[in-house]
Image (cartoon, rainbow over all chains, first blue to last red; front, side):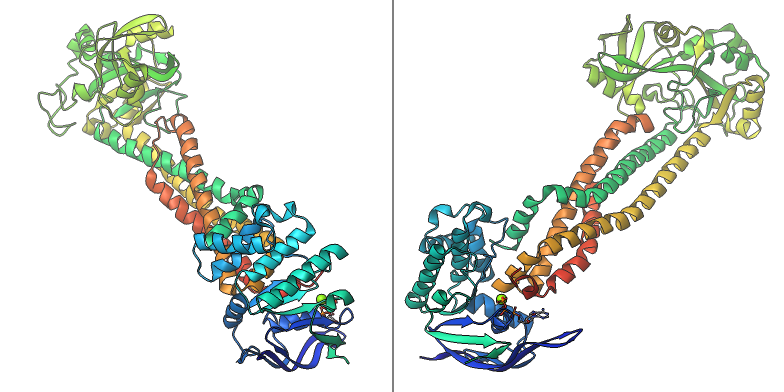
Length: 224
Length: 405
Ligand SMILES: Nc1ncnc2c1ncn2[C@@H]1O[C@H](COP(=O)(O)OP(=O)(O)OP(=O)(O)O)[C@@H](O)[C@H]1O
Ligand SMILES: [Mg+2]
């Protein structure tokens, strides 16, 4: 299996009034294509910070991030935006749908960036909504959908651009156990069938068990 | 989905906020358009007046306002018709022609029109007093008045304007083009004005002034209709220019002490001054709306951007570059400006349409080029007001709003 993502000695510090906060401190690891990685650790240990750094939404203070041979730590903002739209899908804890758009319009947003015309956007978005079992809800607004349905729309949106990696930050954090299982099984299906690499932050041991690799953080450092 | 669609969907979400954001610009544009519409048309009317001056001196009652040449005698107080004789029997020379008038607004079949009573020239001239005094012609020379010709010194009766009329039957009338079309009448028809039937002798050509809404009838008929016998609201005098510079106005004032005597030139210049003032006011309003409108849009945008921090974070997360965020917000500002400009223009046209006849005594037609200006100004203000909020929004650190709450 080829390596998709390599992280070397990254650190992220914040200068606060009462001193320097190490959100990430000398973290190194490598992820292979097709891995399903669970990231665990206590609150404040740097899990979200790690995902944001890997996706280029924040820059590490030091260290290197290499995605498919390209260095992200010194890429321009524009290059990072291009990297996200091409390779990355996001699923957050609180669903992160755009409130004034219907389910299908939300799914179409990433497609607009890749220059698809309206008809193509319709077809591709309908297809992924069908994949997540929401084809009959595509004209509903987020407020008209249940929590689990909203999270599935978010997954559909993360999938529609055929990313090579999906970053998920506590995707089941707001869901009851039954829905959590449903979403986890769905992520596993994507990982297995579409061979999409997944890095998922979770607090739940059951959810962590879906992964085939684990990263554990404590105080911004790899533990274990 | 594309950026324009995204902006459009978002705009549809917050209509009330949108309206309050563009209100200042819209109101400002509306007022400017109204002022410009009225003053442009009334400037045109002034130009027409200067072309068609039939009389160059106006005798008006003391209380009359002279802000507007055309409206000066409408609804003004009255003075006795007998003043005409006072002028004629006096020793004053240099009066070529006079025309007493009585003008009032009237309502015929629900149409608001202007009724003017005039004394035809043949009746004035036939009075013995006129023949004796030899007013016509005797004092005139080539340097005085319009070029002498067989058209009675250049005052073409057909054009009427402020000119005298050679003859007019006691139950005849002449009607302005606009009044004729509003009443749906033509030459030879009869109209009833407050119970008195008048036969239309002629429909007058369009002039672009209030004369188009006017009905001219015999002075004495109009006095009877209005129930103010022996009174007039103005006397128009064609005075010889040499005589005017020799103090004709002062001499007239001596014999007609309780009246206001002005030259058309003074009235027109008052009107030009009023127009200039209006233009200055619209410039001041323009400066105010650039500030108030810009601040108001900026304020709205700032609130909007803060409210949408999360959404902007999502878009950045999906892969929108900073430039797209900036573009989305500026596009929104441009659309708001466009809407504000168009609504402002329409509002201004409506204001001018309703108030024009009262303020300037003329009907105002919309001026299409002002729409272009309204939109340009409004979009410009909106963009300028939104630059800072959009700039900050594009630079939001996207993660700061994606951390769980
Ligand atoms: N913008 C910031 N400014 C200052 N400190 C920050 C900022 N973002 C994160 N931190 C700090 O970095 C550390 C790691 O934060 P992070 O959000 O990555 O934790 P986490 O593991 O995701 O926690 P949780 O499980 O509660 O989501 C925390 O101590 C946090 O206070
Ligand atoms: Mg977190």
